[in-house]
Image 1 (spheres, rainbow, N blue to C red):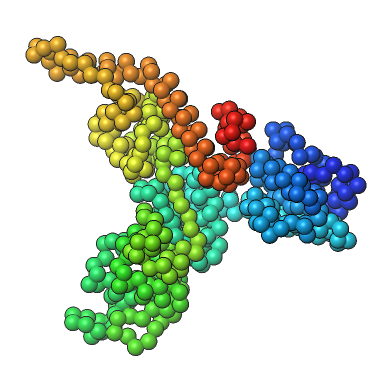
Image 2 (image 1 turned 180 degrees about the vertical axis):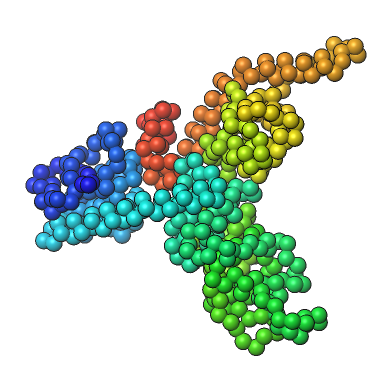
Length: 478
C-alpha cells in the first residue's frame, strides 16, 4: 500500500525529481505553505519542506511548523548548509528529523532511503501500539484520554531498554500502573516483579533488606539472607516513594544501580545482579536535590528516562470509565450515569485523583446504590458542596417539621440547583480548557507542537480548540 508524501515546494522541477525518486513506493503530492490541514483525510507519512537558505525562508518554515497539525515526519531540503546551529535546534524542536542538501547529486536517493526507513518505523510503531493496548487490557488500565495515551507511549519506549526510569506524579494518579506496564512490556518475567515502599523500611534494617546479609554479620543473623535487589535479579524492582530513601543509604543504592553489583552486609565481595529499577514518587526529586534532601548523582542515575503522570483533573474524560471500572471491581451492577452526574464529577477538583474517585464509589456503594444507574441522588453531599460556590440553604419551618420533611426540603434545594448546573458546568469546563491552553502556549513560547504535547492532544486537536475558543488572531496564539 502506497503512502502519501507531501512536498511544500512551488518549483515543479524539484518536486518532479522527488516524485521520480519515490516512484513505486510513495505518492508525492505537491502543496504550498498555505495548505488546508482540514482537507487531509489521513496523516501523510512525511512532509518535505523546501528551504531556500534565506532568513525569510527560515521564518516561513518555522511559522509553518508552528501551525502544522499532523503526526507526519518532517524533513527539510534545500540550502540547509546556511542554517545556523540555533535555527537547527529550533527546527528540530519543532519536529524536523532530517536535513538534506538538495544540491548534492545523491539527494534523491538519500531522501528515498530516509522515507523507506520512516515507513518501516511507522509500521513497527503500529505493531508496538497493538502490543501496548493488549498489555493495558490485561492489567485493566484505563487510558481513554490522549494525555494518558501519550504517557503509556512513553512507557512503551522505556520498556525497550533496561535504563532506570523515574515516574513522577501526584498521589493516586496511577504511577505504579505505569511502572507495571513498563515491566510487562520489557520481556522480563512477569512474576519477577517487586514493589518496595521506601518510606516503610526501617532505617535499622534498611541495608539488610536491600542488600542482604551473611551469617554472623551482626547480632541475631543466624543465616544468610538475600536482599531485595538480589531477589529481583532478572526482573524489575519498583522503588515506591523513592524520595523517602534515607540519605545514608543513597550512595549504596547508587552503586547498585550504576554498577549492577551488590554486597550483602558482612560479605567480602560483591555479586553481579540484573535488576531493572523503576522509581516512583509524588515529590519533585529535582527540587529535593536543590534542597539537599536527595543526592544529585543518584537522581541522575534514577532519572535516565522520566515520565510524568498527569492528575485526574487534566484528563476529565477518564473519570467516567474509571468510575465504572471501580463499580465493577466492587461487584455492583452500575453501568451508566444519570443526567448531569458525569458533568458534576468532572467539575470536582479530585486532589486525591483516582484513589479519591474510588473512595467516592465505595461510599456510594455503602449508601446502598442499586441498579445500573449512578444517579444524582447517589452523589455525596461533599461533592455537591465542592462545585457549588454558594450552597443554598432552606431553614426548617419550626420544631414541628420532622426528619422526613427536612430531607424532602434538602432534596428540593438540590434539585433546584441542578437546573443551573448544565450552564455552570459547561462554562467552567470552557474556562478551564482556555486557561490550560493559554498556559501551555505561554510556557512554550506559542510553539503549538510542544503545547499540544503538554496538553496531551494532537496538533490538529489544538488547532480546532484555538478556533473554537476564538484564540487565533487575538494575540493568545499565533
